[in-house]
Image 1 (tube, rainbow, N blue to C red):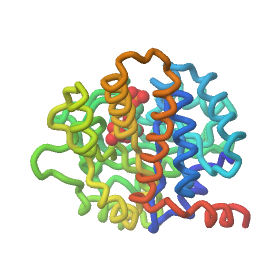
Image 2 (cartoon, rainbow, N blue to C red):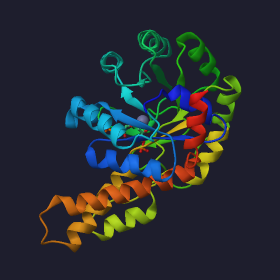
Image 3 (cartoon, helix red, strand yellow):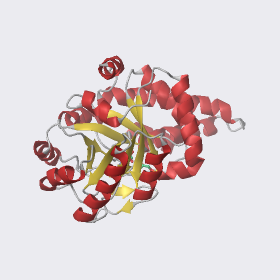
Image 4 (cartoon, helix red, strand yellow):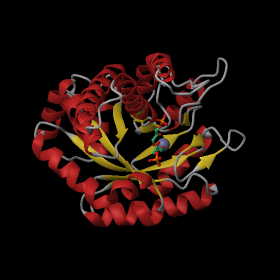
Length: 316
Ligand code: G3H
Ligand code: 13P
Ligand code: ZN
């Protein structure tokens, strides 16, 4: 069942965070639905602009609608990740997405407000909810690259004005995370002091953490032992998720960790089965491993075990 992120956030606020997982293909989608049902968690299917171009937006929509039929117990939102204004309107008008993100974080404060407000007005007219971003994360996505010098933590003093003037439904904040596999060097970590200040300014308002993959060392070691060459990768300590949730974070974005699962499964399989040229055996392993990864992540986010309670909450 597709619901808005807003409904999921109402249930989660202050208690746990919902996993927002980027998907690109059928194997990921099946693993995603299985893993969330195995762990009895609500979730957010997250689609980037790059994913919509890769297998095509029509294909992805068809795959997710099919998964909804195959797994009727699932409760999830369909969310556009890092949309520009044009892509947001395309998703709003599609009748498929329940939530969009307008990422105008690279613009000035006033321009970010103006663009976000336009998207919010169009989305709310159709019952769709909107996430915006204030502050700038570092790191690389397919369509955006921000070097560390340009990354900027969210200023807590600007958050209330931004939310009041845009009427946005949730806000991605920059508190030290970045996209990709190389988030921290040395002992750097999340800025919980900044997050606590933000929550004080907008109590009860749902916050979002991007760039929250954990980049497990064990995963990196296995990838490198199977022929990979990923050095110095470091992610977010998953034991920090629940603390973030208590400070108002209701959505935690995970993409890179899923890519690492894909990389590890494929490298190890090809190393161990050089004679095989059938993609189904490895596809099956990937779907099972991806489902395991999702279920494990939901335990860390606190969303595991919440599905029945969410269902009851939605039926009221
Ligand atoms: O934050 C962005 C996500 O990791 C999506 O990455 O644009 O390469 O699909 P992508
Ligand atoms: P990671 O690169 O840490 O997985 O972040 C994903 C993300 O923020 C998607 O919007
Ligand atoms: Zn992101």
